[in-house]
Image (cartoon, rainbow, N blue to C red; front, side):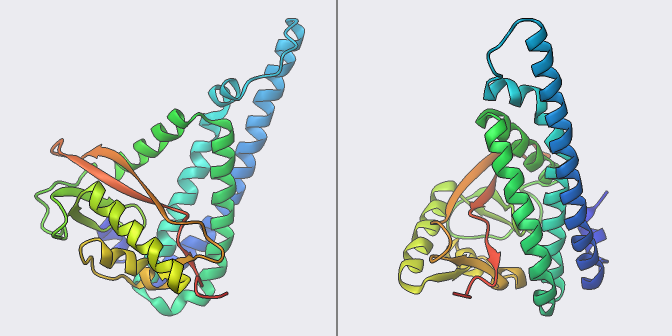
Length: 252
């Protein structure tokens, strides 16, 4: 299935509708996951008590028993955010309606990530992220004609936020992030598009102008990478930014 061709046929209104629906799906699946995980842990504690084991479960034991419960809400949240960004790219004028829905989903997704970090080991979190990132590049190849060329490297890179594909390398991207953090010291806020420009002059996106960071509220931008293989088994990097860029970032 060519997802890009399908999304090309989606109107801004339809993408926004899917995104808003995804807000409720994310909240529902997250709530269901929490209940299911709590039931699993409660039953496990009862079994341990009956067996005479009085020590509480460790964080690692909880993670081992419940991490699968949180895969569906992660997928729902990731898909929802993706449609929100896509609707921005189709029609930037939808920002006001979109910002409210984005804020709700962003908060729900942050709660999910915080809970996942609490329950799961870093190794398990990395495995989940890697599996999602691998799916993103499963049908990509360095031979694709739509990969953007920069003067900063020759490694296939994919931005997890916009889906932009470009050639660069991890160190060049880290340096671009460092420069952007310096910019925020003097200018307070920074658009996502500014970061794209620092990474070898990547073209701006509509979402990239509406999303960004504000040093009064956000921590310094950090970047990490997931190493994956394209369909020709060539190594590629998926770029993740933290904290997530957010709408209305210029408001103080």
